[in-house]
Image (tube, rainbow over all chains, first blue to last red; front, side):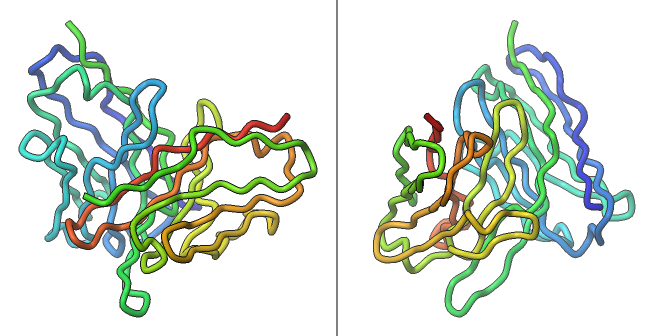
Length: 125
Length: 108
């Protein structure tokens, strides 16, 4: 069974840092891209970042570019999100997700087929 | 950047058909994916590649995509279908994942 378990959330002051982790099991971790998606209280889903299976390619939403860093350790089947210079608007539940991607004819597809339960990040003084 | 537009809410009586739209410029040329999120739970993929269902998703869930609108259709709606639904695409012009704003489905 595919499982994703996030950890590392908590309360942090504005300007502070936090590192989230996502432990994966039940699939060949290194073969799949992974994403972080967040959801602020009462709001919709916001994609944050993605990383290729090898870790060689990374992608970021404009809202976090330059502040957040996605990485992975394929030997530990673990995904990370290093969050620096945190702001109040970063307060959210952060989900990690296993991605499915590739070409379908001329169109490149990318979706999240398995999600973790999420970890809560609160940025407040 | 690419924008996906969903109605904030849709209401439907039990046993009827619910249709949730997702609008975007020439969205018919993209692969659209749909997620269901019940209160306090993580999202679940219900439709991928416009109209394919993952294993375990009831046949009552279907999707279509053409022109500027993609549609998630839920037939014979049940109380348990009450949830928020999000559409999603990959924006190849900017290499970003884009979500719609979400639609709250209420079963009357």
